[in-house]
Length: 436
Image (cartoon, rainbow, N blue to C red; front, side, top):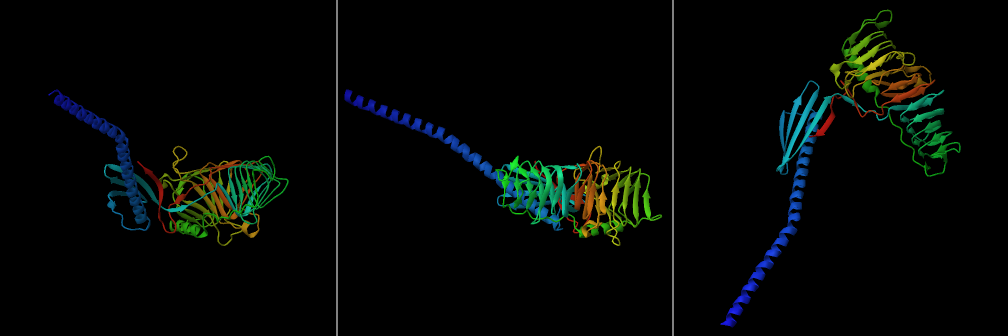
């Protein structure tokens, strides 16, 4: 009997030890497996979130394609992509579309919002850009910002607080002190504080504090390509047609004179335009077939334009070398829509001259801007812009640019895109996008 009890007692111990071992093993397995399960759950959530994002992006692409190609865009559109789904909600204004995209994948949601404006987009990539006529600094003038030129950049020790680019195989930087980096086929008689990229450099030029070669010198660098100026003649002609469609002004003694506060545009002025001691609100494009002279006045964009822009153009097709000249005195101011209290982002005053004296070898300046506010953009793709006072310009582009006297040109670096109220195509342009 004693032997039998001992055997049975030993069997119970084995069973208990086995159960204990199994319990411990399960506990360890569960403890070790918890992070794996959590990681799996997290990974599954990450995948679902990405799938929801992909469905939202696909819906956004679909919405943009439909709007830009003029297809039907109902107020509500449902789209499925794999196991995800998206709803496109569209609200249309007079010249705008507000699009909300709600996308879901299981318990995960990703939502987008887009704002589009009807208009022509013009992209400026440089605060100062000159064409083949080049960029010239004389006397003690200077520039605060970067410069791009398809021609030479010439000075006599003048300072450019930024980078300098003279593009093309004939690119030349001469007599310049640049605080940034210089790019040109040939660099001579200059001081480049950062780095220099070139094919030819003279011993009178220092780069990073000493003549080349040194660690800041990059010989045998490829010439940067020249770039066309951003607004075409065809686009300007279209704006002139838009202005003429608004009516034609009556001239007196060869001029249309504004000497009291008023709103104008769209309008064609078949003579010179003189704006004197008044506030003029621009409500549409203006085409002047003579010269423009602005003295002691404020020119501002109408708040009704929102972020859209219109151009004020001086263009006399019958006298392209001696007319189409814009002069602005130092006391005149230019404001974007809503300024000076609440400026609308992306809205500016555009002064455009089609005078081509510089392009044909003449010396007549197409635009001479006086001291003005940051809402002004000057553009003369065939002409010369002379700057002789300290100015703050949003952007200046011309065939040839000359900075003289003690001027310091300070500008807000390149505009991503400026929208105009009309133009070829009249397509919608995306102006805002965000996820919420």
